[in-house]
Length: 120
Length: 134
Image (cartoon, rainbow over all chains, first blue to last red; front, side, top):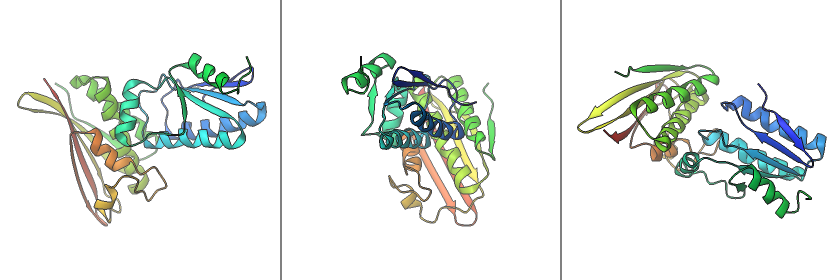
């Protein structure tokens, strides 16, 4: 099953609600870039609240997804990373340093507003 | 009585299967949310290494007990090409697959005990353990 990407004004919203296998992660990467291209969206909020783990492969796909979207001219914010996931990622040795994050979807949209991506 | 579980790794989706089995067992043993995430992530890395480098293999999950602590022992065994330089494979950022190179050293940090044995042309065995007080 493909992960749905919703358009809200000039934003794209993605909430991952499925168990993320490698294939779904890579499909999401491609679908998101296509959707950015098709809608001219300048901001994306990717909500990870439901993810109970992120391993090195999924972290790489997420990090690449952010860089690729940025190359196209869209800013991506990752939101809702669970405490256990944050602890595990850092212990694993992954810090995702240049990535915008926010506590939840609402704060993610605020962050894009503050960065002038979304026009209130 | 929690029974031993084995997950065969033959295709990419088996990584998810192994992950779920790891989470199930760590829940049954009574690990908290953070340790469950550590164990599940370690299993995911081990399963992916089998899939990427050996093609096939298996992961065994066993409940363990010692003095006043209980835990889980996870063995990832394959008959793949083996690792030429184990010391290098344990270095952060070293990868031969284009990944982040966090896998093996990361697993070592997530778990309490870590053992690796690999022979070129024979295969690789990784055994990890995670403990918690009863």
